[in-house]
Image (tube, rainbow, N blue to C red; front, side, top):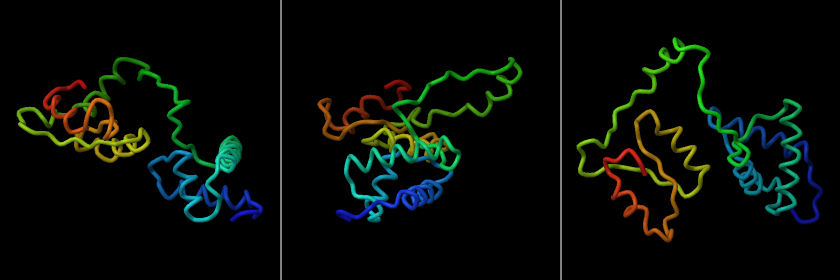
Length: 156
């Protein structure tokens, strides 16, 4: 792909197809870039990443591209309801049993990257499966040792 002129409209369209293919899940810009680079649509370089970011942001502003996960600029707003009745109506959907209560061992899923943690949480939330973020070779030791100390605990 060296010295080849990038056809940005085609790259943006392919990026949209990639994102749409993950629906209803969302993906990050980095995931889209990796897919485009793997397919040979864009070279995997910092200038191409910045160019893709700029063009996809413009397409999103124009309503031509779906939202991506942005953990850096995400605004964390606490939930709110217009009145108490609306709050009470939603409460039953929040109830989940702690599946590790009374268990000698518990199953956890560990992810190295926050993006993967978000995806796994979306997939496993219905089953009450805990997902944690941690590096396998972190200074605190292997993930298994870290998790083992917390079986049956609701806090990390």
